[in-house]
Image 1 (spheres, rainbow, N blue to C red):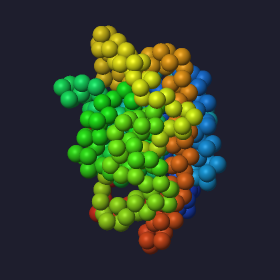
Image 2 (image 1 turned 90 degrees about the vertical axis):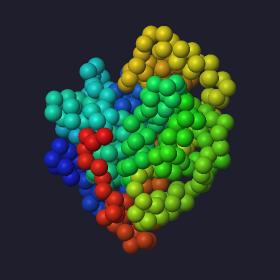
Image 3 (image 1 turned 30 degrees about the vertical axis):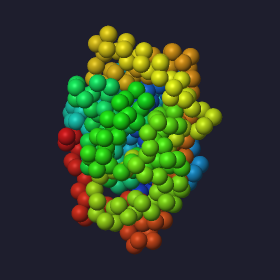
Length: 332
């Protein structure tokens, strides 16, 4: 069951609403990975796994999507199956939300849209696989994900395995710096690169424990500093595909996408599919492993953040400073 949320177009699952009201840890999850990021039935199984992992760690999972024009925070098993099996689910970034709502469509939310919706509900921690960024050749084409923009202005911490390996990682890091987004690698001096534990680049910042991360986040928001934080959590060593090993598959997939004229929102799903075929399923297995790893860490951070904010005399994990305004839905 769900109830009206903090916005006329939002419904919040009872369990999520109760957790937020009680200041218990909640972790947001996006739905693009279900509808567009993995093949069936792996997508649905992974969605169930992520929610179970978060619950095991003592937090409440809040998968976000648009169903029949209603923005939903917290989905039922039937809702997850609907997203996993339907063929006409939109891929909605923040600027697509008005269309999905007004046309009463089903839509899977990207990192950017999920961040915005989570922030409106008061959810501070979000787990995903990897963020979008500057695509290869993006310095000329200006193909830059709205995830960067959203991270620069919406106060949610995103736990991921770094930028997707299909991107121009150095340019993405530059774009994040320009947007004043702190980039923190967890337990390593290197910047992770999705399938690989190291991109070959040094991370701007390093923290090692959920408690250290929570203290950082509490300080950022106590200071009234807006915007998000990128928490780059390397894929477990036993599941990684070293960058040198997967580079050829990525290069071939990118070249094929260019030759076929694949553009816009179709690029990432196309590349992931081609890379998975080239690696004989290893990239999909790595994707599953890293997002599970991120969900577990996110839940632990959410718990530690609630403790840190309470020590500061704040309102727990849902606190938003009066100096920090959440942008309206569908803006920018």
